Image (cartoon, rainbow, N blue to C red):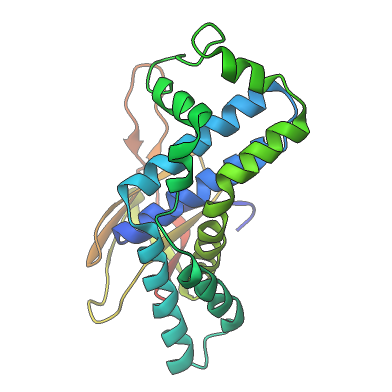
Length: 248
């Protein structure tokens, strides 16, 4: 396979949330280093999405459960090629932290104003939030200081999620498969705790991948992108791909 495109399909809600947060943290870190106002606004918008997910989930508890599960797996399965040191260190850090992550933001008037107005389309214009407009035009040093203070309690969770997902992605069974007429179905062993499926397809192939199903059975379809007013159609070709079943 030349340059692949990787499609991932989480097999439980916990991993689904972790992957969403992984993507958001990557975007946040990227725009955090930008120097123009557009980057600053984008970083804030992404951070608001991160905070919203934390409000809906007890992520500290979920991450600690996953870290503990991985630590036990490493002890009982010495053939797994993973270093437990980082897992243990970040787990200790999270256990030592107190209070709900994000509570410090409740006392910040500027952040609360931005959060309340963000639900309105373009609700943070200069005439809506002049204080926010002023803050955006300050030096990068001031901007980074504030945003780092706001986001710091979330960083340990981000580090833990990166470690967990890396363990899952690198502990997998990889097989080369063929999807006859663009269709493939997989039945998963219910005795095993599968976490994630990964489909690698050659970037040169003119198809994208749709994955559906659950922890027992999944369906993989290779679809032609929509063209003009036509909906995407399933390929009628036999499509080669690589399938990774991640179980750790």
